[in-house]
Image 1 (cartoon, rainbow, N blue to C red):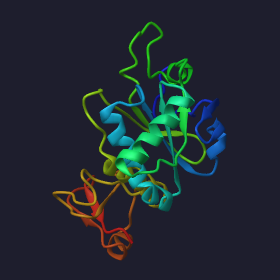
Image 2: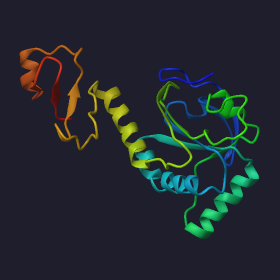
Image 3: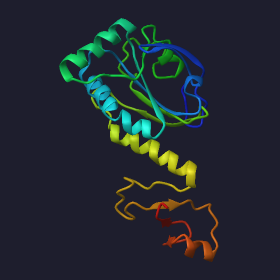
Image 4: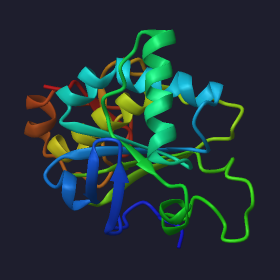
Length: 212
């Protein structure tokens, strides 16, 4: 069944390079970023794994765990990790799921049951601390992911959860309002609140303010 935003991430027992993990309970109380790949020793996926690892501290600062998946087995994963260490001088520390039988990819709707190739198993799923799916991204095999955008997604979701303010396009470098954020149209503000919060109102539905 295809996952949708707002769904609860299904309970799955996975075998990883860092041991067995139950999702989402193994990351309960934390955000986690789940990202899948069609195979080990593939060039685009290798650049992505390096990109995630190089931003591990940024994700950790957001209390966001990383967990990868590749449609290969644990032995291949460890050999791939060793290759990246030897040739690219990067040590991949986040867990990588063994999905040789494709059961996880099928459970999460990343592959069709009759699909022979696994090239479409290239998804990113951002999950909130209570196990709710908040963002889903899908990529073709020829296009590498933008890791900075995934960091931005987690920041933007956490901003909304903390303040109920919305991040505009390209935030924090929006072409209209810069690093400011949007007040949802459904939010009712009194005149004094508008003044106190330094809200700029271009209309009754386009309002923005600084993050404080």
